[in-house]
Image (cartoon, rainbow, N blue to C red; front, side):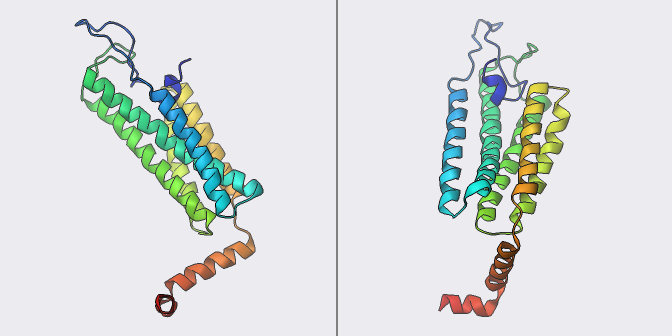
Amino acid sequence: MALRHFVVYPGSVARDEPHPQGLTNAPMPHIDQVVLALLLLGLIGSAVDHWRRGQRGWRLAGIVFVSLYGVGLVAMLAAHCVDILYNLILANRSFDGSPFTYNWRTYSLLLFGVLIIERGARVLWATRRLAVGDSRARAEILRNAGIVLAITLPTIPIHAFFGVLISVWTSLALLVTALGLRFKGSELLRSDASDFNNSDPLIQSAQRL
């Protein structure tokens, strides 16, 4: 199975068959390699970033896993949107043989990608805040991953591979965040104290002096 089936939502993939007017429906070049490179860079970058922020052991592994989940959502669904636009510009055909035109179907596919990209970016940003002790970031990760799960679960009957892949990955991210990234008592106290200090006008004035 081509990696294109892995990184792009079904319906956005053009066939390698002759166009009715004699044009060739060539797939978008190198998009799979770009996505793989982004995933690898995201894995290495998040591991280095959170290591430098003092994360170690299982907590480091959990934060890196959730960070990679956010990177994966952004990279894969960005590729999905770019591939749709590429096929739309070239008037390629989808799996069912219909040409790509700007219609409700194309709009829906693009909107689908944008919604998940936004949630992936929010998860990625929240993991960085979680790593520096923001106790509210964990709830934000859970909320955004839950929304992604609600979006992708209904796609399983439409395209089982994509729907199961993203739904399982999202479920694992939810479990890791809920069970493995809880704050210990001392960490929570430090986080709450930091929030209090940052919101105190007198302390803010003193810090500026």
